[in-house]
Amino acid sequence: MSDKIVTRFAPSPTGFMHVGGVRTALYAWLWARKNKGQFILRIEDTDKEREVPGSIDHIQKALKWLGLDWDQGPYIQSERLDLYKKYGEELIKKGYAYADPYTEEELENFRQKAETEKKPFLYRDFRPANPPAWDGTKPLRFKVKNLKRTEWKDIVWGDLSAGAEALDDFILIKSDGYPTYNFAHVVDDIEMGVTHVMRGQEFISSTPKFLALYEALGAKSPLFATTPPIMGPDGKKKLSKRDGAKDIMDYEMEGYLPEAMINYLAFLGFNPGGEKEIYTRGELVEVFDLEKIQHKGAQWDDEKLNWMNKEHIKLLPEEVIEKNILEYLPQELKNPKLAPVILERISKWSEAREMVTRGELDFFFKSPKIIKEKLIFKNSTAEKISENLNLAITELGKMSEDDFNVENIKNTLMSIADELEKRGELLHPVRYALSGADKSPDPFIIASIIGKNETIERLKKATQ
Image (cartoon, rainbow, N blue to C red; front, side, top):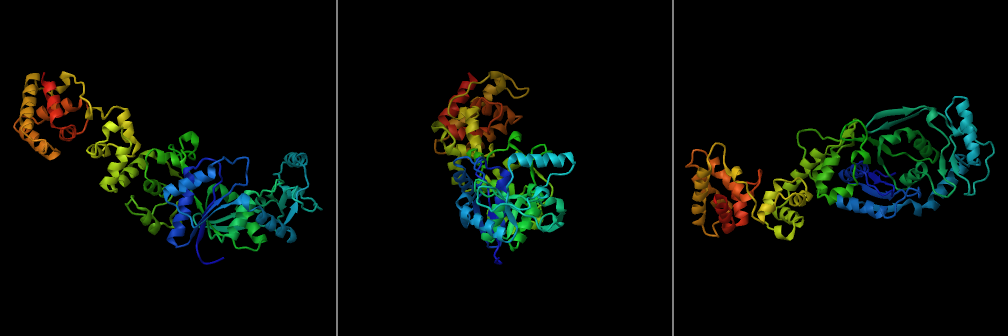
């Protein structure tokens, strides 16, 4: 094995890209990039019953969206069957593998016997004394020759161990010719020179099998970094589809930035320390450290993700923000002046479309219906409000179309408001007359967007 750091992401093509799997890919990618190593993409498709058509393309599309580029691959395990067969035959020669001669019925009898004796079922307790030659029609099993306590060091969890009960004669190659996960991933990691494996806690219990296999093959095992689970919003159980877990590409559809998603996922189980929370991709590469991955499961929090996404949106150039917002708007609302207004109120691009659906932007392109009583500010009278609106109409009417911008509109209206006992006696009715909404952007922005003529028309309508 070379000194170069080699990591890998090895998903199964089952159709759903869970955020937990994506975080594993991210950690592997960050570690490879930090150490100027290699990041490999490998598709583990040996369980054909679970494979979903199109999943391999889906996996690659997701990684490309996130910018997790790979240096080698994608390697497809189903295209490497000869390699696993070769390794299987090598283990047979070394006395570490044999053909499983038993039928399902015989295996079930063994299980029942173990249950009757109140013992755990271990295949090695029923290992055949004279197994037949392996011809590929029967499963090939690993033969545990050294029953011992297994000890290993995990980068995240430290020293771990398991007793001899964790070792059993597991299947290497099934009767259909496809290798099991337990076998194929070890062979591939050896062949590809993988130095660091990021994985979930569910693989800890199987590690003694993996290490026994590495030992039997005379190969050095990679270093393991076990990541904490991503917990659901309640913090009590792992995030699942039932808890609202979405495919990673759903977040692209909803208008999240890949940079924000990477930033958020990185912090679900890792923290470089300090108060800084918004990191660019390059900054994450610099600060990432496997030894700072936490043990405790990190709780999924949509509000935190939305906040982080908004912060990353703010980092974009104005023209990029404008372009993305306008893409979600109908033709009649594709006004660049609307972009800053919408930006203040969204945390992801799709919320611009949701604002349109809810009618929150209707007043920008059609005169609103108003309720006269809502024009009145606190204890003012209808006569006083009408008088103030007429003052605004007069002063705004003196402005030219070219000068009718946010700054000039604000200066004009504020000069009138300052002469009044309460500013709200002008600003409140003007805002409501222009928007017809209980909550809206300030009146200066609305007026600048709908223009001088429409502004004055709406104010006149409110005085009638």
